[in-house]
Structures are given as C-alpha cells and as structure tokens.
Image (tube, rainbow, N blue to C red; front, side):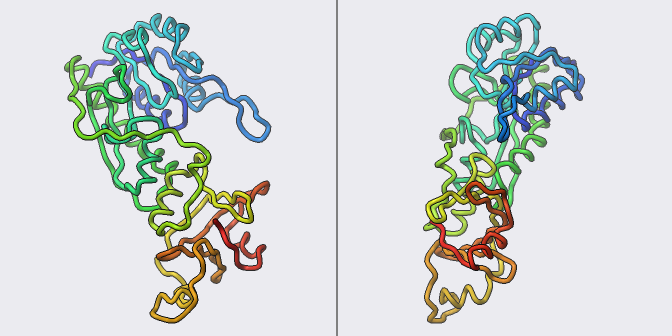
Length: 322
C-alpha cells in the first residue's frame, strides 16, 4: 500500500495506539491535533494529553485546540494531507475542515455502528449488559457517526470487564480495522457501505450515572459498575456519603453462611436487606436480590482507596449501602 499523508486528531490514551500504528505502517503523519493541556490531579497541574506526549515522542508536528475551528482548519490546510484520521478527539469536525484533506476524514469509533453512536459507546453498551463490543471505521459526514462504513471488527468480553479495560483492548485491536480502512481507500477513494440497522445513542455520562441501583439483580449491578469504571466512577451511598467502588466482582461460590442467612438453600433464614455488606472470611460480600458480589476495592469519601474487607472491618464487619 502506498503511504499517505495523514493529519491525525485525538486526545486520550486509547487514541495513542492508532497514532503509533499509522507511523509504524509507514504513513507520513504530517500533523496531530489534540486538546489543550488540562488540569489533572489534586493539585490541578496542567498536563499534556496522552496524544500530545506521543506526538512529541514520534516527532509529529502538534497543534493544540479545544475546538476544531478556524485556527485548527487553517493549520490543517497547510499540511496538504491526503486523509484525516480522528480517534476520540473530543469535538466535532465541521466544514470547511471536513473537506480539507483530499480524501476527507475517517473515524475509528468504539461500537458496531449504527449502535451506540455518540460520546460513550463502550460505557453505554456495558451498562446495557452487552458483552460483544465492536469498532467501526467510517467516513465522517456532517451527521453524528452516520457515515459510510469502511471496516469493522467485534470481540467478546467477560462480564465484569470495566470500560477502561475494554477501551484499552479495543484501542489496540482497532488499529487493524483502521489499517484495513486506509488500504481500502487507497484502492478505491469512493469506498464505503451505508450503515444498516437501528441506531442507538451513547450519551455522555455524568457523575450521577455512576450511582449503582442496589435493588437490581447482580448481573445488572455488575454491568452498571463495569460501564462507569473508571469514569465517571461507580459509587453507592454509605451513611449519606459516596463510597466509590473501584473493584467489584461476581461471586461464583457465595459463602454457605450467606446462603443460609438468605434462605438460599431452602432454609428459613431471614434475608438480609439488599445492599447489606458482610464480612465472610477475607471477603466483603454485597447482598443483592438474587445473589452476591464481592467488594474488592473501595474508597470512602475523603480517604484513599483500600481493600473492601479492610474498609468493612473498620465498620465492625457489616454495613448497609444504598
């Protein structure tokens, strides 16, 4: 395949594998656009984006902007790129930038389009209980995530895989779909097939999306936790304050004591209220309507993260979450 002159746009860590793959494939990445340095950490230190750091390492000219407006368009136009590639930049590409590269722009999107168009496709898919997740490379058009498809791929994830883990895996495997799409465009500049099927939308998550509903079944609670981890962060309330839940896992072998208390083995035990957390050996066990989950790592308000069992021992071995 002939090398192309490519302008790249992206911001977070899971956009970095695509940038690296383009350079490794021998394309001339003539520039990268990323969002401006952002305050991070408790001290709010201005920090370059992961794509900015990777571009500097790779020697790719860099332009920082929080929106793809006139300045970004003028900068990109001066690069005389054959193709624009965008991966999670965090803003929309509009005209005239959309038509600036000779072949237009393509986007690596983290869903099997037209499902989960929008800002948080992996998160919303996991929250809905989906385990088969996809990537799609498509041609950018004015409508949101609606352009013709050039390549796609899917893979299965086990229940309880967090959005962070899934995005990292899809970011790596998605580079193959990106390379196939570019090769297809090199052979046929008009390539692409119309999206088929019912569209769904993955709206951006808010902090409140992270609150778990402990009246729901175990599989649903675990799916909700997975979709909101690490961002915006899953939590439940304990004594009126947010308890962040960093690690949560399905229990394949609930303790006998737990099943007896709930009458789960046909006994007459009194069922613990949903959301009750009890210490069973070295495990913090969260009782739910149809089973239990293990609180492996939590973070109380104003304190560092800790093992779930250690937190529960500090509460006398039991607590109630809501």
